[in-house]
Amino acid sequence: NAGVMQNPRHLVRRRGQEARLRCSPMKGHSHVYWYRQLPEEGLKFMVYLQKENIIDESGMPKERFSAEFPKEGPSILRIQQVVRGDSAAYFCASSPPTGMGNTIYFGEGSWLTVV
Amino acid sequence: TQLLEQSPQFLSIQEGENLTVYCNSSSVFSSLQWYRQEPGEGPVLLVTVVTGGEVKKLKRLTFQFGDARKDSSLHITAAQPGDTGLYLCAGESTSYGKLTFGQGTILTVHP
Image 1 (tube, each protein chain N blue to C red):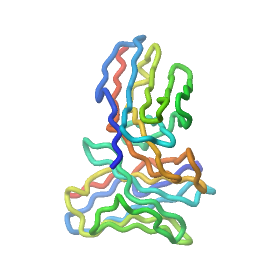
Image 2 (tube, chains in turn cyan, green):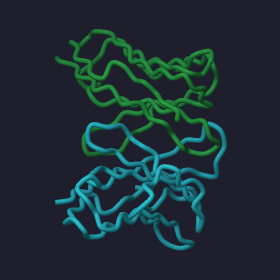
Image 3 (cartoon, rainbow over the protein chains, first blue to last red):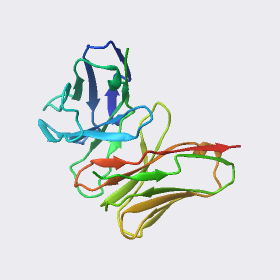
Image 4 (cartoon, rainbow over the protein chains, first blue to last red):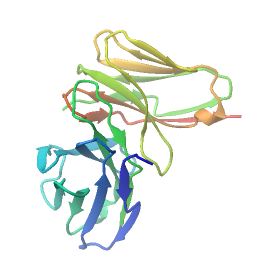
């Protein structure tokens, strides 16, 4: 399966702990996006990254959230000191070098539950 | 802030009926995409429309992009129980994959 791979698929954290979500893009894709789907809400853009660069982080909460896409290895979405409101499905997507109308492909998501 | 209003939010119909889902915005999008999402899974792309007035057909599904590139519709003919799922529209206005999603339409097709 050469699709976008996310892990873990399900993660339970206690309030105050850290959550790390990983994403390996499709082969040949160098651009990664993170989206969040809160209960009863639609998908919301969080951040767009290229290798070693954050291009657009306009959808990231100002505090506790960070993302990286290192030269080697998967992209990481990190949530520090999680709160119950962080419970959501986090989707990673990837695309080849961009242009108008480019398709992005979504992974199957990581479901974070904060207890 | 760009918004995409999707309607209806819920749709429950009998097998064989036709249906249309609408996606409307006051903003212009360079492209518009339709996705289907199953419970516990990620969105799967159905189609991308790019040109104003464009119509694309995928078997029993017909997708249309408005002339002004502000709205779109998804029409399903002779719906089947296998069409049951969450349908999402998403607009792109950047040169990269930053999508604005509608709230989604939960479709249930009863046998």
